[in-house]
Image (cartoon, rainbow, N blue to C red):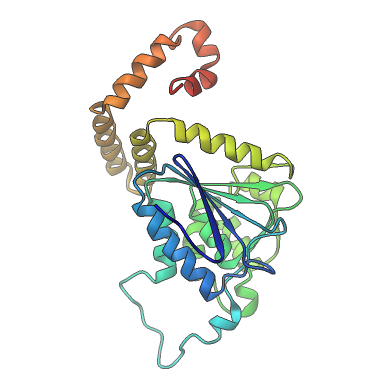
Length: 276
């Protein structure tokens, strides 16, 4: 599948798509960038050949800034506010990255704020840079609130109290604190993050694609009541058992030394050898 955009550079390597955002000077989410991100999310969701999506920035100081405030000032305000039963387009885009059958990874090397942070929070994993990655929800200080999933996603990610501090406080959250709170999976020195994310992406891409996809689907079911989530887990497990790739991979695991003392002492390495 061809991916051609003006503000996004997409490189496909096997089952991995790496997207680099390049919208100087600060990767502000302007309407053109937003349109490309929406279009890209739809295309990635439909691509049958991918299992991993990595999003990063061409600017080491800015991953994704907030949504363009000048554009927000042009939003219609006539009449009274009403509730809509349908999700707004930004919510739909964020949910698409969260629920698509690919593993989505945000490589956040600089600042991320507002709508950029909300999009990042919808990804499956987020990695940052020690002393460089900064998160900021700047909406409340300018008189609004995070309207791109932030008030719902952040409490689920870091807990209610910490989400309140991020959202209501409107202050910078440093990488060390973001890692400790669970916003970032891990943090690295600037010269280490790229290699780690690339290695992780290739590791995941080497695993049986059906297992990667259904494992993500099962984890997403953790939002359901426990009994329903367990029922879905059991169903998806049964589906995978009937897949030839599962049968082949389990046999290979045993051949390589799985379930032996020596093999289990290095099971992480052994897992990476199954597809070789």
